[in-house]
Image (spheres, rainbow over the protein chains, first blue to last red):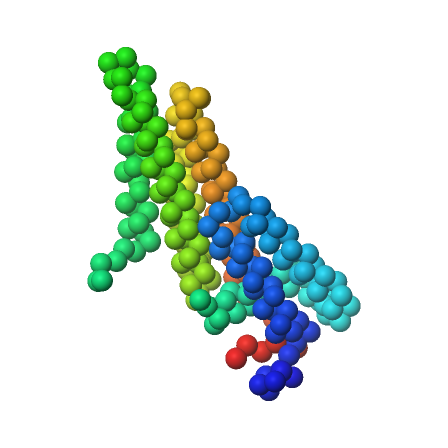
Length: 85
Length: 142
């Protein structure tokens, strides 16, 4: 449970925030060719893979990596909209 | 300020510049047009600016969009703009292999691939919405 009383998940709110920051740096980068863009995407992919392998695969074998990856991205979009600049 | 432009209008405003680049590219090889090479080179740079600017606008709009279908539409349209530029540049880079056209072709191709990747990605997200996930996987978003 977070400080404001909303339930946490296997993936925490802080982790979503961290992933959203990386997602922002590659998905909405003005220069898709920039090294920083590619590094952010690689870091994002590594973190999603780590979360899936360490927390999801064993506990929820019915969830595929593709589905998990897609849902993470959707959560990142929502997070970024709610915490825009 | 009340003046504003929709994304389609912005992309539409850039389209004639692709045609202008083709026109100037055709003039460049004519001996009676001594300034044509410089004009063509300037036009390639103008199109480069438009391409980069439009991509940035697409990225900004995609970030703000609250609907995944809208995001898919943005990247699809930006991809079509890149494709139009690529078709023209594919002809011009053969004709002017030592000018700015081959470089812009490579840039447009990378931007087109980036649009396609984002478009495919968001279509996957839309498809995944139909899959029900176990409760407790993600935090509840207030």
